[in-house]
Image (cartoon, rainbow, N blue to C red; front, side):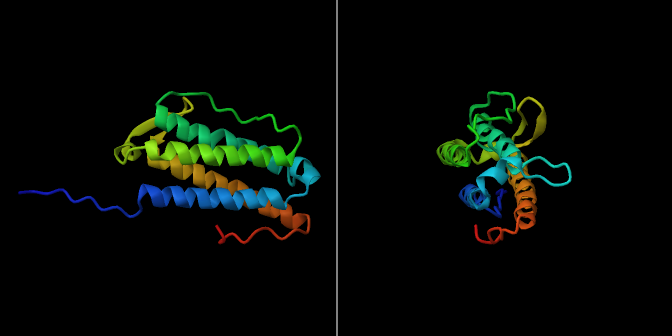
Length: 160
C-alpha cells in the first residue's frame, strides 16, 4: 500500500496570522505619521506613504476576494480617503476584517492552484499571497525611511 504523505511547514491559519501581523505593523506605521506628512512627504521621487497605502488597499482584500470568488476584477490603486489619515485607517481596518471573513473560504487545495489576479498577475494562490506580504513589507520599509527622515522612530519591525 502506497500512502502519500503531505508535509506542511505552515498551516493556512498560521499564514493568515503572519499576514495580519504584518498588516497590524503597517497600521501602526500609518499611525506614526503626522497627518500632513502622510499625504505630502516623499524622498528621492518616491510616492507618498499615503499613495503606497492606497496600493496596498487595492491589492490585499480585493486579491483575497478574487481568490475566493474566482472572479477577476481590475486593480484599483486609488481610494477616496478624503485627505484624512483617519479615513485611511478606517479603510485599512475594513480591509483587514474582510480578509478575516474571506480567508476560511480558501480551501487547502486552492493554495496550490494557478490563478491570474487582477487579470494580469499569474502564479499560484500561495505565491500571490506571499507577494501581498512582500509588497507590504517593501512599502512599509519605505515608510520607515520617511519616518526617520522626519525624526520619528518607526514601530519595531519585529512587534507584529
